[in-house]
Amino acid sequence: MKYVSRRLEAMDESQTIAMARKSRELAAQGLDVISLTLGEPDFNTPDFIQEAAIEAIRQNYSHYTPISGYLDLREAIARKFQRDNQLDYTASQIVVSTGAKQSLANAILALVDPGDEVILPTPYWVSYKEMVKLAEGESVFIEATVDQGYRFDAEQLRGALTPKSRVLMFSNPCNPSGAVYSRSELEAIAAVVAEHPRLIVVSDEIYELIRFEGEHVSFATLPGMYERTVTVNGLSKGFAMTGWRLGYLGAPQWIASACDKLQGQFTSATCSIAQRAAIAALEAPPSRVAYMVEAFAQRRALTMELLKTLPGFAAGEPGGAFYVFPHIGFWLGRRVEDRVIQSADDLCMYLLEKAHVGLVPGEAFGSPESLRISYATSEDRLRAAFERIRQALTPYC
Image (cartoon, rainbow, N blue to C red; front, side, top):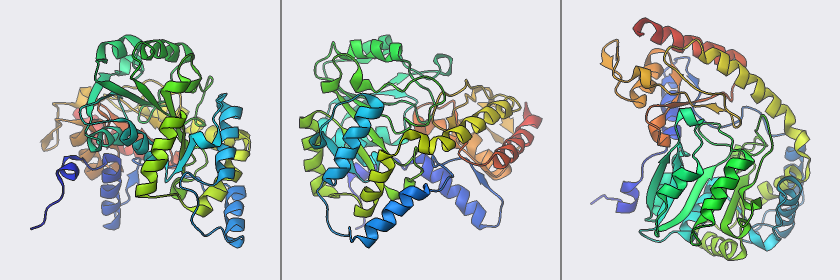
């Protein structure tokens, strides 16, 4: 008999990956599909990082490393935290993993028991909810609407907390909305967290470098939050190193030790060559990759202009990352050709089949009346994609 565990059956497939796969399937049939689905910079890894990896191969860094990563890499991460985030972590408080996704999963599995509640402000990144399922926790959702700029507030958090609350997990800048929290907003949230001694914050800061205005505020720097926060980051987004699979966390020692123990029984350490390359990336000043942020800022401006041409799409300007997350409630219940659009998933499938543009439905992020558009592609491709969407929708306004 062929069957999988109930644990696996309860998990949903990542919709970002699923929509990217459907886009590739149509492209394989010879169709010109523009996929705006994946959260991946379209830049190559900078040359100076590549050279560090090549040198590591020549120096025979080809053996097992400590579970939490090479000591000199963790020391480089500690210096980065101090330089960029004003956070004092020792090397022993840092765990390097196979991508920030594993860092997040390590934290959830280390902290959450069956029945514990994990607060997830919506929209959230697609894998958060599934990680909570795997840990047999209970997700509690706080709805942050488009009118709020997709940012939850302190009072919403206060209303969601119970004696069973264990973790608050959110990203800043946010995937999928691009929302960026101000220092005052985070301070108000921290004041509520302080009222609940059992609550730990998992702060996903993977988009730290892709921010278009204001300062980046690491949650752990706020009063009383250092011992209550797991800070997660990585190299995929800011350094265009998605395929290198290297993420990391900084945390109170007891949490870091727990994550090290967990990782030792699952994957052990991440790739030795990626670790050596990461040292070069982290020791470089952020200005070395500022050209990518400048390009994303230009594409953001273009995307916001192009959104105005799409009927029934409403979105504020994102403050970071490389996504826009328009509300598409206007289209729900409308007839388009031979179908009625009942959900964002229906709209995305129609646009993929009719306009050959791949988007990700908001259901995947806990916001069923929205969808995510990634502008991590060329301006020409963005213009072409939005024009196809406009032509596919305009006759049905």
